[in-house]
Image 1 (cartoon, rainbow, N blue to C red):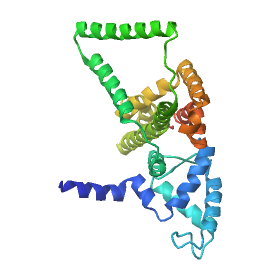
Image 2 (spheres, helix red, strand yellow):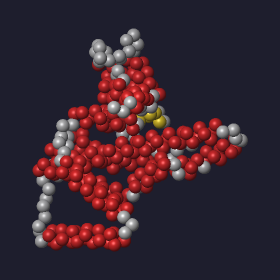
Image 3 (spheres, one colour):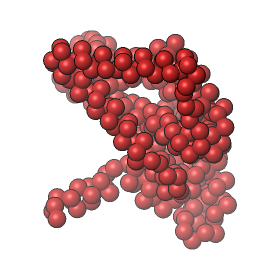
Image 4 (cartoon, rainbow, N blue to C red):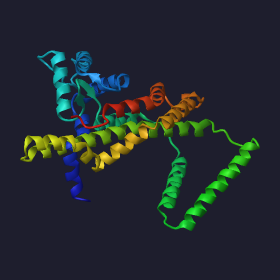
Length: 305
């Protein structure tokens, strides 16, 4: 057995926000509260509102020995302390008086959802997806011009044959189990985009903070520090985190593509198979995906001054 593995896992248990979050004594109550609030207010919840909701939940479970809801102190005070502790440890983040999700929170909620998800997916379908991605990547990495030409001609031939069949009225409309599986896979991929965005945003903010601390920590004239901070955005954009964030942002501001995506999602959700593939919450998340992604992006398009 790899002797370094236990040490890495111990380090993750001590330091990783997602592990700390799930190991917290009051995690079920706080997570339940935040998940409900964030579903209704994806752009963030006023801190005091979150405290009020959590205090109410603490009161409901005051006599439950599984939780520590603040013996000898008001539930409101206990809820405020709990939320401040989560913010201090980076389990959630507070921006402009609003509590917002972090990548760690999104991962934890996704993990908890997966524990209850008993839907089956087809390995054959996933294999087909992997095969297509391998084919596309191999073609794009191959420097041989003749190989690229041959690959494109093969694709054109397949599409022309498919077009001819459709023009003759010969095409299959996916239905039943295959349609349900396809919708579930689209849901999983689409919803993971928000988690990806949170991870990119968290990394970007950390890089921004490190850059500012480095600039201010150096012994320079105040005017030089101000100049460095003002030009810091360009420096940050050139970091790995900045490049990923900028790419994400460029993709999200392509309005026409997003409108087509929104229209196609609505079409998927109008399909009869969607009712069997997804529950009410999942359908709402998919329907609101584009607006939530745009909202997340607008919340943080550049480092704060």
